[in-house]
Image 1 (tube, one colour):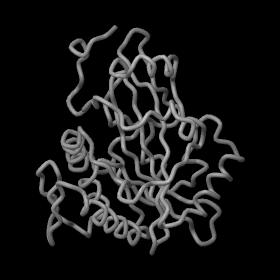
Image 2 (cartoon, helix red, strand yellow):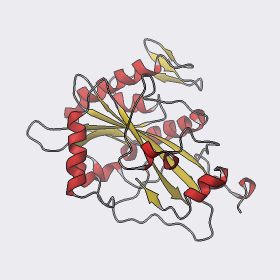
Image 3 (cartoon, one colour):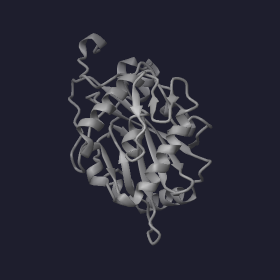
Image 4 (tube, helix red, strand yellow):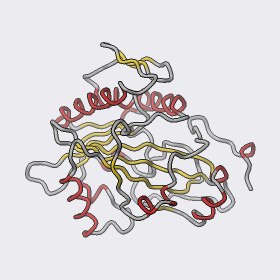
Length: 274
């Protein structure tokens, strides 16, 4: 068994000590699509590694902006509405101080409130990655029209930007025409006051949060290397004015050895779920 002292965690890979949910252990989250209602005030979360994750987000947005942020100019109204929704949500959370010109985060960092750069500003306020999806008037599917994506789990914003849901999910196993139609119906029926969440979880050999990969680029696991569980709490939320759908992703990473024995047994042999 690999111990914590033997694992060299690279800078920028903060590890959680526990998980807020165990989706493999509950019927409502174990079976796909595993959708559940979001309780009021529980869209965005602040967890134990907030400060460490936010330092990494700040650095990525400042130094790798082209890789982690994209916005179609036609989606700017949706991005501005998204920033407003983020501010309204975090205003009620302990540790945030919302001012006229800036926001102080729970880690004490003051973020300028730049409404001309709404996705970058929102991305510096919360741990979640934020993806905007909009359906053209004459279109059949939602398109990815903007995102701040600091912590991709084996996909790239560049490759998915302005693509529809069907091709965004290439090469997700089992995402066939039937599932694509069901997902589109879900998006079409989503109501602003009824966000929903699901979770997925995968095993990685590298705990780094920023892991972009292009379609067809395999995620490799060394046979004898350490193992980390990467779990995402994914929320779908409809914005009221623009009608855009926000797909938010809160990422958790912890050592497999930090899990209880029954959880390690349940996940034995796992390569990818969800």
